[in-house]
Image 1: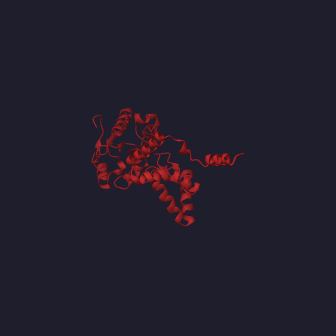
Image 2: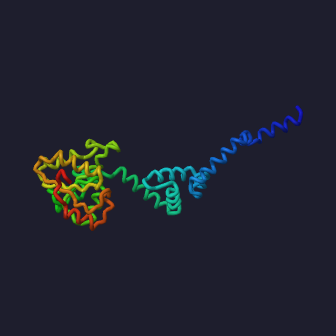
Image 3: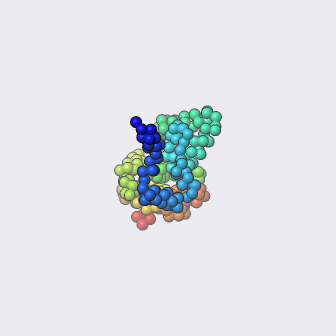
Length: 253
């Protein structure tokens, strides 16, 4: 075989894939990256292009952490690196607490609150008033109201609000528990403490229409909270006043 043939073959083996691109293809390729740089923040562009991890374990941790609400990949990486700088016991403690959160948390059979027992501390507290039930969307609302120190009744957590856009109807909420409370014969008043949104108003109206013929009064927290606000974001003073100054609920609310 002629030496020149060997040389040409070795040159072919060393060729770069881009060598096979036409001038037009390369031009389009460069235009694409130029466009991407103009669209993205320069720092984000660099992150997008070169983001890689020295460890698959680290990459997996970043993937999992970034799946949490409000946490992007850069924040997830920062948190993962922070944990790596801590004593191993710190990460183990965090991991164990998360496992315990999933395995050991119970739902209170009376109000659907999170609890360590079958009945939560609020429902089992003899100092809380059985005749007063505050209807809320989720656990965060209970925490917000409890922080005001102005409420001495008990709760019923719906687990959400009626929202056709999200596929949530009455059947997905804990509305049967309201009827159970009524049939127990101890409740005298239900307080609607739902978010000041169309979905919150729709949910309150549905419950009122369903149970208004029972010998029970319905009230709603005073609208010191701006329309569209979620209950958890209201300041404690405003929320406390809205509970104390609650108004009778009727179909015109």
